[in-house]
Image 1 (cartoon, rainbow, N blue to C red):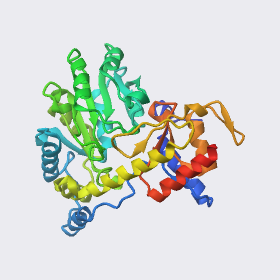
Image 2 (image 1 turned 30 degrees about the vertical axis):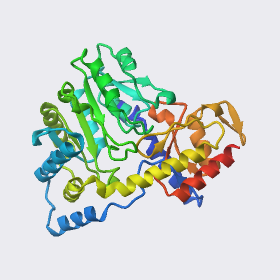
Image 3 (image 1 turned 180 degrees about the vertical axis):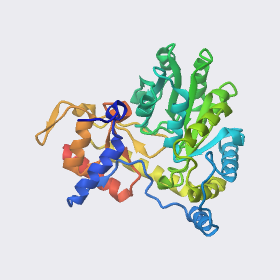
Length: 394
C-alpha cells in the first residue's frame, strides 16, 4: 500500500537527472555513451577559486553559517550586481542559498498560495513547473516559436494574464533554448506589467556570463520593475562550480526576509567552505572566465554546422548558455530501425539506445517538438555524437 503523500506521488522526476541516470546505467553495461544531457560545464573550477576554498579550510571555517550568507559574501554579491548589472542592493536584500534551485524554491514557497498562476514562457527550465506546483501554484505555459528564437512577446504575455496571475518566471540566457532577451524586449514586457502592479517577476540569470552577443540585461534595471523583480543568480555555470551549490537572490527586502525565514526552517545556511570560495569568484573580474565563454562559442558554431547536415533538424542560433534546442517534429510518426518516433521523448530514447547519445526531451521543458542538446562537452565528443545521430537517423 502506497502511503506516500499526494505531493510526492504527483511530482515529476527531473528529466535531465533521469536521462543522466539512464546514461550511467548503460555505461555500467559497457556501452560507450556520449552524454549531451546535463547542463554542466566540462571545465575544472578555476584555480584561484579552489585556492580560496583551501585557505578557508586552513583558516578553520567549519561552523554554522548565517542563514542568509556570510556578510563578506553578501558584500561581494552586492559589488557584483552593481558592477555587472547596474543594480543596487543592500545586505538585507540578499539571500545566499544551497544553489539557485533552492533560491527558486524559497521564492515559490514564500510567494505562492494555492491556485496562484505563474506564467512560464516555453521552453522553460525543467524544474520551474514542478517547483510552482509543489507550492500550490498553477503553471501557465506561453508557447513560443523557433522563428522568434523561443522568446515570449509582450502581446503573448498580455493574453496569458488572468486575475489569478501572481508571477512570471523566465531565464535569460535561457535554459534550454539559449535565447537572450534584449533590453527592448524586456522593456516591452515591463510595459505590459505596468497595467498589473501586483505581478512579480523572477529573472533567472544563472547563465548571465555565457553570453555570445554581449550586453546582458536584467528586468530589475528598470526603475518601475525594481521593486517587483527577484533576480536569481549563482556560480554553477559561469565558474564551473555546479557541485559547490551556491546560489543567491537580490530582491525587495520583504521577499528576502521571507526567504531567509523559510530557509531557516529547511536547510539553514549554505556550506561554509563553498561560500568563502564564492567570495573569490565574485570579486574576480569576469575576464578571468572568458576562456570558457570563448570555447563555448566555438562549440556552438561547431554543433550548429554539424546539425545543419542532418535532414529534419531545424535549428536557430542561440545567443547564450550552452544548449541547442532543435525542432525534430519532422520525424514524428516515422519508424526507424523498428522503433516509431511519436514525440520528442521517443526521439531522445531512440538516440540514447541507437546512437548512444544522451539528450533530453523538450517535453520536460514545455516544448514537445524539440530536444535539448548540451554542448558542454569536448569538440571531439560533439563531432562524434552528431555523426552517430546522423547515422542512426539516416
